[in-house]
Length: 356
Ligand SMILES: [Zn+2]
Image (tube, rainbow, N blue to C red; front, side, top):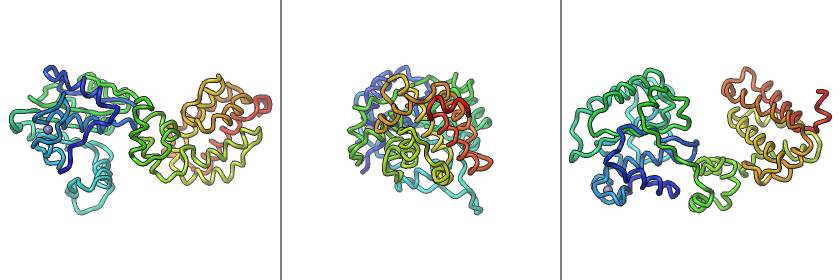
């Protein structure tokens, strides 16, 4: 028998404290924090703990009937509300998930939204008695996937909450959600774990040298693991090294071949990497330790010493503005060239860039 989803090692203390105050538990929680720190896992483990018949210090025992039901995905008092696209991905990740019934004969891409029908479908569930009069738990993730219609439907539910029901929502950034919805939830911020809390776990997952992966993921362990398993050889992508090493020596990289490489990738991914690079350059410029690419620290310092700080700040700002529209570049070729040119100019020696 498999156990229900448990908390990750760095989540235990928060979970115990939070679940320990169960008598005054709110009926809706917004669990938020940086992407990739394990918020979904936390919410699912919390659901298991709330449903467990004999929790140990607030946390699911893993042995009772309720825990077995949760583990098999069959607990009648637990609902997961997530976009079909997320459910499909989970199905690929974990084969124990029952296949979702196909929505009609036409095969179309699964929805990325949480649809209003998913919330309407809960009403019958609210009217059914719970197992032994316990909790009913709805885990909704990510809350950013609510569209305006489904968000309003959820808001209606939360305005007149059904008895014994707890909603656990997860979100990377609560400020991107409907404010009225946020105001109906109690907030539970999850911190970014300290490296010593999650490096052993990353090693257990099979990473021999997890440090650079954790750094490039901004300290988010699940993101680090995903990146390490994505097929890249190194935490610092090869194209970024090709870009940096001539710059570090005061030269200029060839933009053409680099642009060809980037064109094949999702713009959001390489713009993210460049944004991290500029954070590191701004840290290197003030002699602070770099955050994302510690292995490139020497080269980053060399670049930061020569470059103009204003230029670096401008380029970082420009990248942030491009990140917002990056998913739909009008012309990928022009866009990658323009971005790389901008980066190279910003990283060049301060004097020579003044005239560009
Ligand atoms: Zn249990």
